[in-house]
Image (cartoon, rainbow, N blue to C red; front, side):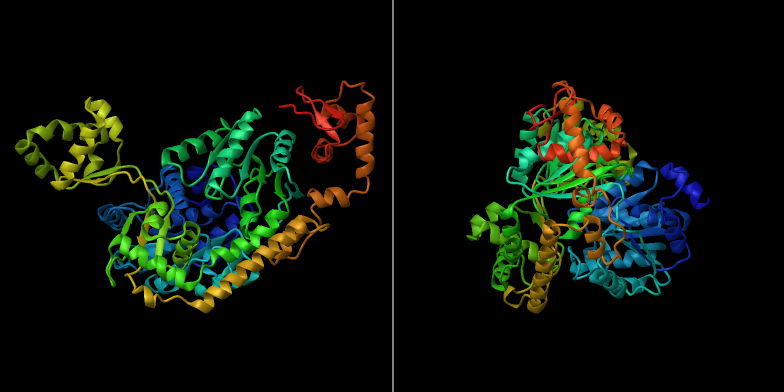
Length: 637
């Protein structure tokens, strides 16, 4: 099939987005390829489609379990065989997935960078026919990036196993230093580089000083109809803001990494299908979520870097229709943001103390425990070892960044079952143990023959309901069969998982690069200061500020950000005055926006921008019928 036929068959599109076809042809030509496309620019398709056109398995390296699972699920929904390997999986499940890559029809294998140096993966990859090596979120390889992950540095060594296999490195936000670092660290050979402008012609950026952020948020949501994301820093805030919006008659819900898998899935689904208008979330929300019609992204807290802000704000307007990215800040935000970075870098002695406590907690001896994982409760851990919670939290993050551990906050996985014997052995067991016979037959009836070949997700509650027995009895039967090696039963994990990524070190000799830590701290502080400069810049077009930061020659002023609207529109004051005059002349009846556009002979988009500014400045109010009036905003819902 041609690439256009593949695009139509699996994605349903008639044509490619800008640069996609050029990138795909570069990969098909077996060139190393660096892809810099903004959030929502269609990066995944740039390696997924050519991999379908080439014989073999595409190996995808990505840092986030949630993103990994989301992409695998999307591929499967399109009828494309894909698997992922991540911490917390049973070794039998990993073994089966790798076998299917060698002997089955799997086209995509997703792994975290931490897996690349494991003997199991290396030996199995030697037996696979790898067609493409895709490195997603490639900025993680650079110490200059905002999300540096040391295990990414292993990729170049791993490439030695893949002679002649092209590498595709993809990221949405990379400064010139990061771009150079990606090419160097991945040892890319004469790479083809494709970059799309960082300017988003349909996205209006604004940053407003605001002490009463909730009230301003409400005005923004009232002024811009449609789907929205509100980003906050803490889990507690997500719930508080969502509940407050609900009381203002706005359909809102909250999302953070501490929810169960089902809760997160249900909330995400409700928002995607517009049963919920606004999702209030931490930055755990958004990665890999494909919702093109988000009209507004509001930040109630200042992000730690322009890279992070650009990615999160860029989730608005992926359908290329007008959208808004609004950042609200106050003096405390700007005072706190630098201190927060300083606190994130705990003293080396604290890192060693926390590492030693982890080893004691998991009962792991020096030299052992590589890829050992266990349930982890931060509060209980800190109480047991008399550690301060906040400092310990940041120490764990730093140990993770150094590549010693992996902490999956509230990682949840459904229960899974694999029949561990063949058909004949199972039949003999049923004959010899008739009290298990009906239960095993029920499992096969509910979940089919795939139980013999793959781990299958199960729901103990559904089994209990079908079998008409208590759920505790189902748990007991599954555990008994697992103990007898008839089943491999992986019970759902309800707590965060912590994994040792290396053999355990003696904490006194923990190999921490102190100089590199200090350099990283200074780079993070520089990023924070660039973010503060963006927020407080008094005049310059915000799109041009972003372009300059990411090393792109700034183009023309966007004409739609807060600065452009207020300072680069010489007739703005006249338009505002004429709007007030027309509304005053209605004797309190008000006018609909379209009526105003006709009266003023302005296009609705231009007028809409001015009206939103006037609503935000409380020069206009809007009534329940949607008519505009001169004067301060009423509490209309």
